[in-house]
Image (tube, rainbow, N blue to C red; front, top):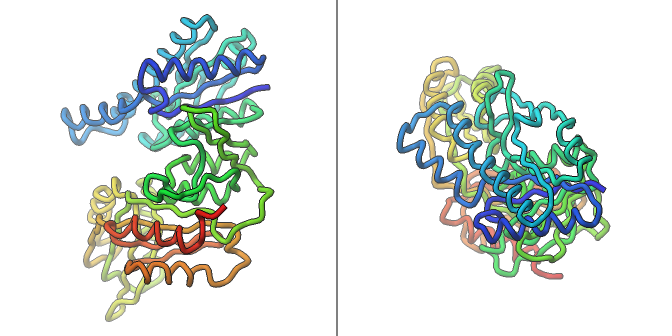
Length: 403
C-alpha cells in the first residue's frame, strides 16, 4: 500500500510538531506501507520571507520571489528527514529539481505538467520514507517556480496520481471539512464525506481547507482525498466522486474576504469588447470570478467582476495600460467586499434555494452587490463588514448545524 501524506505549515511549525509528524509517518511506515510525505514551509516562514523581500524591493520580479520562497519548503523537508533519522527510520528529502517536477513558466502561479517518478520509486524500494517539497516546481529554463497559494495540496495530489497511491491524506490544523468555518460559525458541523464538485466549489469560494486546484486534479485522476488533523487521531472527511448519505439542499457555506470588485465603465456596446477585456487579463494570468454586465448610456455598457484582492492593483494597472484598446472611459476598484456562497449538490433538484438564501440575507439586513450561480452553488458579493453575518445567517437558514 502506498500512502501520500501532506502536512501544512502549522503542522511543522516547531520542533515538537516536526517530531509529532515524524512519528505519525513512521507509524504508517512500520505497518509495511510505502510513505511519501509532502510538506509546506514551517509556520510563518513564507510570510517572513515575503516581508523581507518587500523590505528590500517592493517590486521584486516574480522569478526572484519564487527563488526565495522555495527555501521555506526545502528547510521543512530536510529537518523532517533529520527527525526521522533521529528516531531510527531511514528517510530522504527531495526538492522539485531532484524529482523532476516540471511546471509551466508562470512564476508565482505555475501549473504542473509532468513528474518523473523514477527517483521516488527507487528510494521507496530502499524502504525509505520519501519527503518532498510542496508548492514548488521547475520550468523549462530550470528555474524554480511556485504553484500559488495552497500549492502543497496540489503537489500531494499530483504525486498520489502519478504514483497510483491508495490514498492521499491532507493534514491541517482542523480535523476535517466543516459546513462552515468553525472559527466564524461556532456550531458548524464536520462532514464525514463530500463530493469532489462540492469540495471544489467550497475550496474556490474561500473554505480554505483544500486548494481548489488540488481538488480539481483529484477529481480528474480519481484520487481519494482524506482531510484530517495533524494534532489528533480523529476521523477526517473523505472527498470522493459519490457519497452514500442522502444529499442535503446545501452541504456548506463559504466566505472569501480576499476579494475586490473591478468596474470597467463606458465600454463600447459592440461585439468583441468583452473578449478584449478578459483576454487581456487572461494573458497576464489574472483569474476572474463573478461577472456582471449592464447597459450604460449612448451605446455603451459597463462590466463589473471580481478578482483576488492581492491581484487588484495589478489588474487595475493592466486595464489602465489597455484603456484605449478596450474602449473604457473609467476603471474603478472596490476592495472592502467579500464573497459569500452556499454550495450543495442537492440544489440541482430543488427550486427555491436561492430565494431562501436571499430571504436569510434580507432578515440579517445584508445588502447584495452582485450575484453568480451554477448548478450547485449561489455566490453573492457583499460588503466586507457584512461577510461573517451573512455566513452565519445562511448557515442557520439551511439547518447546517443539525445532525
